Image (cartoon, rainbow, N blue to C red; front, side):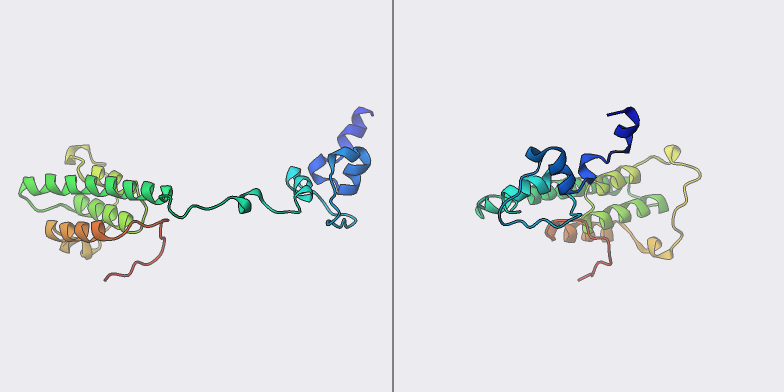
Length: 182
């Protein structure tokens, strides 16, 4: 085949089954249950191999042991606990300062607790570290929310929120929507 002819040929994943079987009959396996429509395409090996197994995925035959621990949830619970421990350490550090929290500290603590409550684990530890950032190391151009809601937040409210979040079960997946307060 010439160089120009090779460039005009479709990649195998985009050839119809008839074109593939004409080029190399051994590459496409048909079962007696599968009907072939003219122009039907096969994409990669999945459909060609699926023809041999009657399109049943292998994982459907695997037994599920309900007594096994849910590894995903164990990881999520560990991530949640790590975040809450970081936030608890930050609150303990602020408690020892014997002063009111400033806007920077309130905003980052609130964001950290909200992230953990929403199941966005990993964010809480980052926000706790940001809340503990000394004033001299903070960005002078940081745009903090000016919402008066943050002015009402103090250590006792953060500690109550931390205890309530700690008591709540870990979320299987992050929740990106409104959170109902109980």
